Image (cartoon, rainbow, N blue to C red):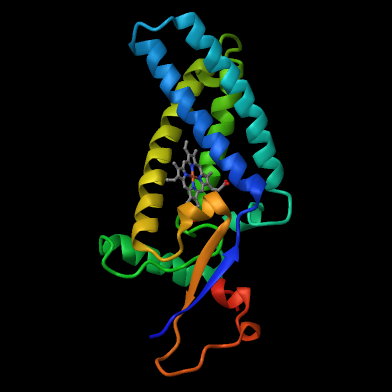
Length: 215
Ligand code: HEM
């Protein structure tokens, strides 16, 4: 097989910026929460920073939520697996089951195995940030305080984010799409395998739909 390689713009600037601001912001929040509880740093100063960054994160999350309703790869539709993506889902699960020995497929914006996880992570990020805002006050349902909700949601989000980072690195190392660079420069690679000896297909014959597996 002789692959034809296409380099396509996928992630908008706003989508990439919000992704990295959310990643950096939550990184800071987890670190500062740990320092306040487990080390002899000045707890008041670090709590202030934790609150200020948390409030900024609320704004960035609102920005990201807005992008769910703007045309582009950040739209909510790209987080719902489609029938046409079944082969990508199947090949990704096969890749995991073989511990990386079978090929990892290419995908358009988000891997279908991870689409629901990304939605869950965004929801948990919103719950964490909002419950942090009401941390010192309001009681919550079923005897659960907003402080309990804040800790529980941020802990689940932390584990999902660690798994997400590990899998993103694994996908990038073993796959051909360069997803991590994609989250930095907005572009991804797509490979279209064609039999040996065939002339390259003209640009006109290759549609985005054929790259992402849509009929
Ligand atoms: C707190 C840390 C992080 C969180 C909460 C997070 C969250 C997310 C979410 C929700 C998405 C879906 C896209 C979107 O909503 O814009 C995503 C996509 C992505 N993230 Fe992260 N992320 C984090 C850190 C990282 C890091 C450190 C890397 C790089 C090693 C990374 C690489 C990626 C890539 C490559 C995608 C696209 C995945 C795909 O092609 O299926 N993320 N991330």
